[in-house]
Amino acid sequence: KSKLKRFQKSQKRLKNQKPFCNNCKVCNICIRVDKDWQAYKKQRNLVTSLSKKVKQTNIINDLKARSAVNDLKGVWKTIKMAANLSPTNNKTDDSNSHMLDPDKLNHHFSTVGSKIQAKVPRTLR
Image (cartoon, rainbow, N blue to C red; front, side, top):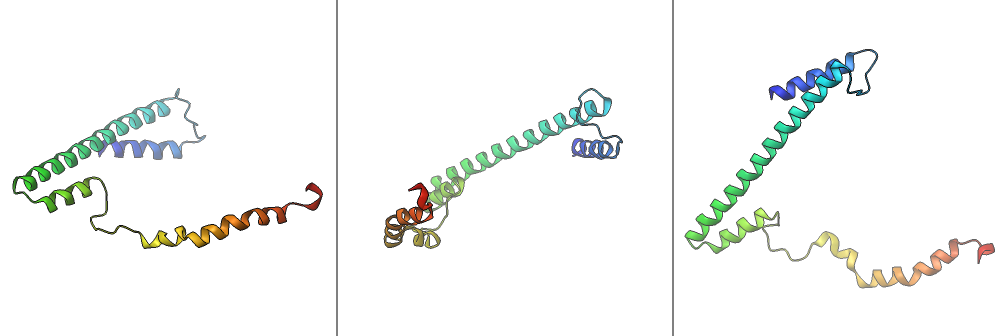
């Protein structure tokens, strides 16, 4: 957090500087901001990778615990959670079912040619 605060302070200093330096990478402020940005990115990536490793470890431990007691329903629930799948058994999504109506698709593709032809000026036909 301290590196982030330092980076934010340097950004504020850079904004208050007149005339505004356009990331020249030569002046002291740009060099300091670049160093702070690199430190922030390194810390952010470290936290992200640790978070992913902890999540993976928790999922593995949960799978081991559930399979040890032969809880197949719990095992599949954990697998679906790990894969970001819906834990429910809904096979169809009602919100998208109207998009695949065969009559509407047939109507669209049977009339699209005449609609486009009507838009073309008669001199170009």
